[in-house]
Length: 190
Image (cartoon, rainbow, N blue to C red):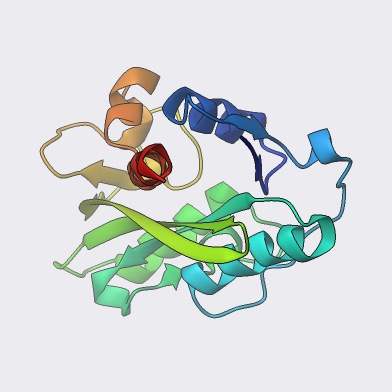
C-alpha cells in the first residue's frame, strides 16, 4: 500500500520509510502537491489532523501527517503549538530559543517535553498516535547537531542535549519516531 506523508521534508520521509517498511511512503512532491497546507489550530493534534484531512479530501488517498511542539511545564505548556514561530512568524530557531531561555530565567522548574502527534487517515477513518520525549530546558545552548530547540533540551537519562547527541542516539529516543513506530505496528496488524 502507498501512504502519503503530508510533508515536503525529505528527512521526515526517510525516517518514516525506515520505520514503516511494509508500505511505500510518498511525499507531497510525489503527488504534485505544492500548496502550503495551513496549521491554524490551537492544538498539535488538530494541526496534524488538518493537514491529513486536506490531503484526503483533495486527493482521496490514504495519508498521514505530523505536528510537534515543545511543552514547558513552568510556562503552562508553551510554546506548544506555536513552537516554530514562538519569537515571530519568521520561524527563527535562534530567536525562539533565546525567547524561551529568557522566559525561564530564574525559574527552578525547567521540566519540558517534546510532543508529537501523527494522524493517519486510512480508507476515510482517522487514527492517531503520540510520541513524547521528557526532559528539561538547559540554561544555555549546547551542541551543533539537530535543529529547533535541540541545543537547549536535555532528555531524561542523558547528560547531553539533543544537539550534542549523534543522529543515531537521537533517533532512538525520537518523539516522532515513537509515534511512527506505533503507527507502523498498527498498520502491520491492519
